[in-house]
Image (cartoon, rainbow, N blue to C red; front, top):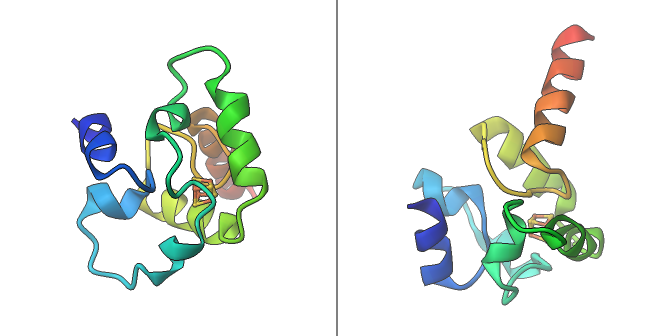
Length: 97
Ligand code: SF4
């Protein structure tokens, strides 16, 4: 359902979209993924991870994006330049520190 929603909005695959947050969304204007195909931010297809990470690599709001994805517990997709598994590893590392 989330993917369908993301494709429907044809913009940023952000957690805000799925979480219904009422936070200020103005930072999305700076998202490098605006206008990109949201499908590349989900790891299901070969090559998409690299494509998505390239977009995140030139994003001005990568830190905020990652912070929000971590705070919202996003379980799927690439946010802040990290895959869901990489975020889980980061979370485990933070918890162990
Ligand atoms: S870090 Fe990646 S997913 Fe997050 S806003 Fe930037 S381009 Fe989009």
